[in-house]
Length: 136
Image (cartoon, rainbow, N blue to C red; front, top):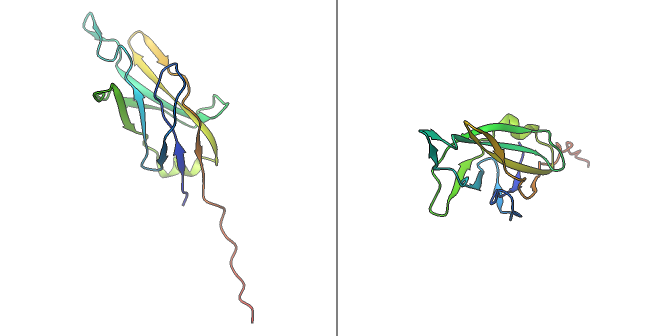
């Protein structure tokens, strides 16, 4: 069993991001709705959905995702909150280290990816402890 601590926020598409602490596995990701979130042109939504990806900091190798998170309704401040949706196997596969996340707006005209989130840290439990030896 692993214990994970995650610091993550996707609070801007192209601006510096602040971080918040979230405990996994029941963590969520927050990000701003794309400016065209509700725009419809000729009967087509400009944004159909959003996609989440997580990768080690400094790498482009995706270790989680891409995960379609749908097109949730933003709150009053145009922020969307969705569960990350980790599975136990995905959590077990993550090594201790720093990671970043991106969110992409997907529509019929293409995909636009956000800048990377502030780095967040995944901490796993220590390796199994050796058995004690009882001495007299």
